[in-house]
Length: 167
Image (cartoon, rainbow, N blue to C red; front, side):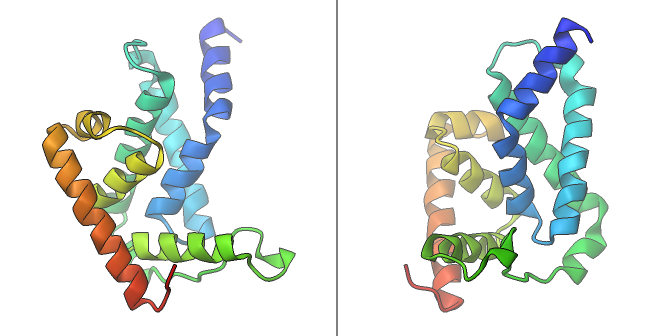
């Protein structure tokens, strides 16, 4: 294994949470999430020769993962037609969900109703990116990123409230 391949694999393992979060943000069914997860890894590998190291690996990984998720959903237009959120967390056999798990499930269920850009904005926010960094990732201004984030947060709160959850 080359040094480049070893760095790639170690970086993928180090930032595996990114893959999980993107897949869960964009896809609700575990089987489909696994398909997206694999597609993201394939696209990361195909794109890796173009990674110049001008940004952090995780920043590059965010961009590839989100773009892959968007493309994945566009390719499978029938996915949205058959999509139904089960509300069952991964590892649901472990007993009743905790309050935190219930909140997380409500959030991801609500996120399914966001459009692709709103999902990206909220994902980047959850990952701790600044308004400027969110704008750079999405190719919009910092001010536009700030406005989109505020509107997306409000929309999520409304969706969650309409689903009968109060946090």
